[in-house]
Length: 80
Image 1 (cartoon, rainbow, N blue to C red):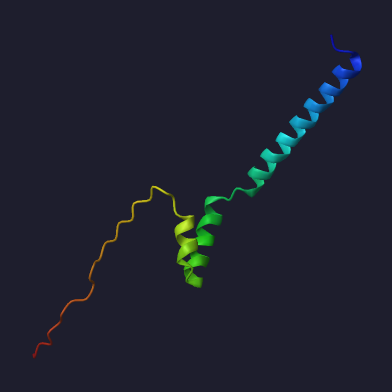
Image 2: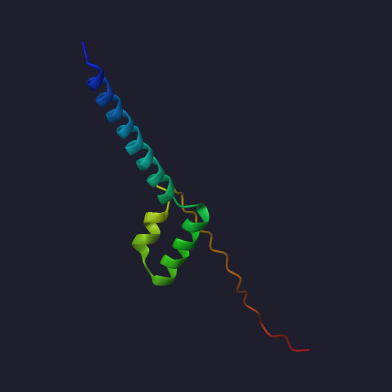
């Protein structure tokens, strides 16, 4: 059988635990970035030449598709 003092201490400990968990959740939410922040960070990494940072900002399941379209045409001058 627990005394009222033991029960009180147990409840205080549970409340402290809940506050600590809530603080941790809030810290994680505040640390999360928006998609706009990610794009800004990505462009900043490009400007700095930091390829490691660029790769870190990409999703792990990214599929990179490059399309090379040549806009150059050989133009032969014509005589009129």
